Amino acid sequence: MTYQPPEGYQPSPDYNPVKPDPTQPDVAYPTGPTDAAPPAADHREEVRRQALDDVRHTRTRAAWVGLIVGALVTLILLIFIVQNLDSQNIDLFFWTVNLPVGVSLLIAAILGAVITAIVGSLRMLQVRRAVKKARP
Image (cartoon, rainbow, N blue to C red; front, side, top):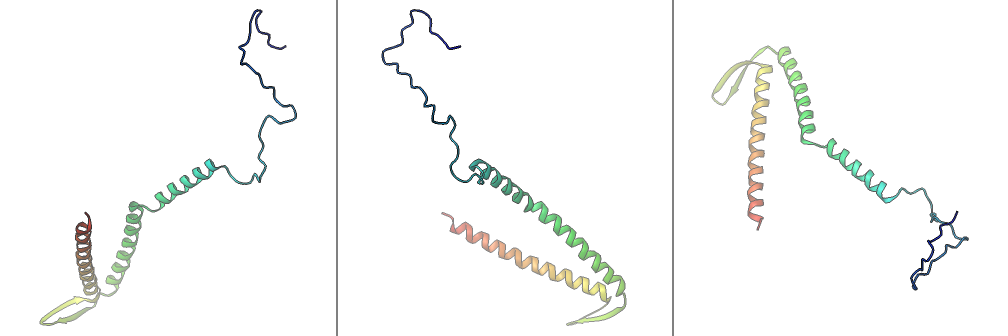
């Protein structure tokens, strides 16, 4: 059934209906290869990949890994100290101390870490001051 306008209806004088060409398809089909994903899908994939990268590299994850490594090192040091309980005289300049070998090495490691932390902190402070001076 075809639509019929009501009786007495007159179309406007500039009305010119365009009839579709029956030889042309109604839908535009891609003419190139169809293996490529649409741009929106590429963008979504890129956003998803970036979100995963952001989750993989976080400060919390770095702190967690640091805690695990620190716990393992502490366990190894504890085993070393327990296995090396023989006392030894340690002479440093005018001091003489009699400590177990494991304890003395632990103290030396702690002092080395403290010295490294102090030097690193001073360097960070120096860089921070230089950055503040360089800013307009």
